[in-house]
Image (cartoon, rainbow, N blue to C red):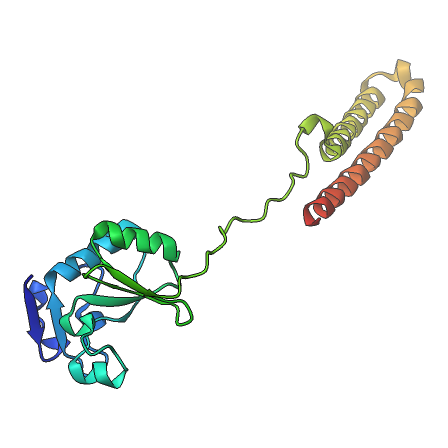
Length: 224
């Protein structure tokens, strides 16, 4: 397994870095800036990123021996070999993450639920730490539909009645004007048309009131 070592991550030649979702600064030692690149481990890390389809937040990757001692790492920590990564679980389901990591070839797993990250390395196969608690499936709350059948909707009935009555009022007014201007022989009908207009106006107002009430009721049902 080829391993490349540089005194600082800025020394890594840009044309040799082939892992598009990661930077040398992410993989470098947090204490010294030095970097050891294990190409097999990095290939598996990129494969894991591709498999999950979401970012991997790296808490720790390569550690220099002095930095490993400073943070209390194991004396033979895989981090010093560049074959281990601590990945935050903030944006991952731990169970799905572990399954994907095993699928791409990681063998060592350390669980740190209180610190919110999982350790993965190339092996040997082993595991330690407390398992992560099972997370509930994040389904959105299911709200009952306000109206399932349009023919039973008071909103539809009310708005339909209001619309029909409004159109009727307009038609009556046009008819009144036509009769008043062209048909003097049937002038006695004009008062009746005027009464009809007011009846239709009342129907329109009732329809509007029903529509408003139904919409408020639908909103209240949706809040329950």
